[in-house]
Image (cartoon, rainbow, N blue to C red):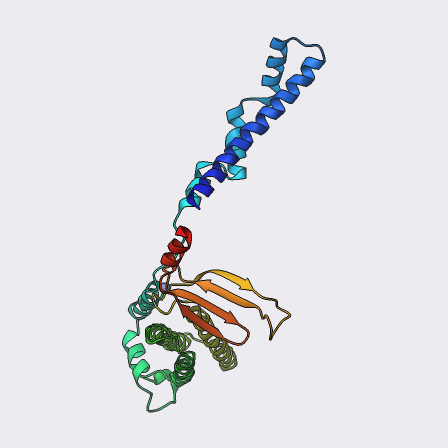
Length: 284
Ligand SMILES: [Zn+2]
């Protein structure tokens, strides 16, 4: 694989030189045929084509034969640590808390409910039942989905941690939005009401979309090392549903196994060692 890409890169560089020489010889042959002397031919060709190095750089860049293309071949594939996402979420929570001038009101609204709902501008605690209800329902259904798929305790705990962080961020954002709407001097109650109503719907849909994205992310991770599965390959036919259905297979680069997904099911097949298998098949 490594030598193959190096050979490919070298052949691209050679291709430029070969093409350049071909055009130069062609032009010289035509000029010679018209009865010119060799020294004159050389001079005209040099004038018409210009310096080789002038074209070489641009041409190699265009066909992927420059040094940058070589570096791209050997750059390790981007496979970020599974802990990058929870770290970003935790950081977002801290930033949202620290940057909020009413941070203590946000914190108390996060854990308690207001005793009295009216008037909203005088409330010490912001009502966040709507956000809590949405995220609570999503958390329960996520736990049920994780239990049903049965992909292991490790990935389930990781997935729940991610969703709990997302839920906390979601409720924090809700409280911050209500705090902002209270701080704004609205010109009319109708405008305030309609914007709040629009916000409720947008919040609801955004929460559902986030949960959908979370589910797709969890499903595409290796249950052992929690990293994303790679090299997705499709097999089968999309028109066949029963006999030879369309199947998507992706593997863990650490060699923990492969995930096979089709219309009916999704199962992770652990392997004894992907790289060991490869080495064994190579030595046969
Ligand atoms: Zn793995």
